[in-house]
Image (cartoon, rainbow, N blue to C red; front, side, top):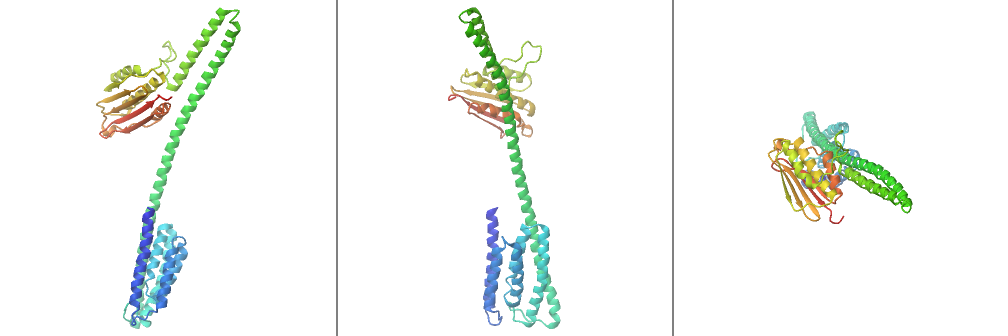
Length: 397
């Protein structure tokens, strides 16, 4: 857009310069009697008005109007083009009130210029080879000249205000789009920060309490080790039990394990991993989702990696079940290597109903893969449906 603006600013002065030079060459003929000094001076003044119109539009318009009147009196009249150029720039860059106020001022100068032009034709030197007019035709010629000036100024102002409104509208849309994108990124960052804050707060409570208990029990076991070895062994066993329970709590917090309904006999469900993916696929198949799973390579023994893979597949299949329509097939493909795993979940829903909700589920996926220096991508497929691709690395952890 800037390149286009500079092009327009360069073309308009070039048009004026070409017309001014052409009329100046014509006016050099003796029968026109236009002084050379006035042509040069008025041309320089017109170029100065064009050069300052961007930074000082209103003074440039005032100077262009005065120069145009003098040009109609003792010059070639080419400086009337400068008035149109400057007025158009004001109409583009300023509000409507300012543009139409400048139009009114230019119209008043147009009436004066029409009178000067008519008087010159009747009494002064010839302009562009125009024949002199009879005294009785002066009024009619003034009306005609003023009408031409008025129409030219009106068209220029209308074109300028229309272009200015269009530019301001496009600028407003771009600013609004940028603001919405910024707000979207902020919301995603806030959601991720809140999730990290919740996990950190819960982990602090669990670990701080458990470590306090373990330290107290260890101190008691150390004091009773020599005189009461049986009690010391029991205390050490309690330390081991507390450590394992704390480790399980930390893994649940990091993995987002769901609570088991009350009365089921346990507080939390068993920690899932990649070995339980066939059971997960069977659950979704029973729910009516045609899922097919392929596995290449052997899963890692790292429980954190297995939990993350399980949650990503679970979230992806849940999104398909919630948001997709007319699903004919769902593919879950896992490719394991000793240090990496690639996850692919894609469905073949109809294009009209394939869009899925990119809410906190995808934010949670991004948080999980970030722990393993990985990446996750969610996007619609070309032929309809949705695709989720994730990649986890743990070799250098």
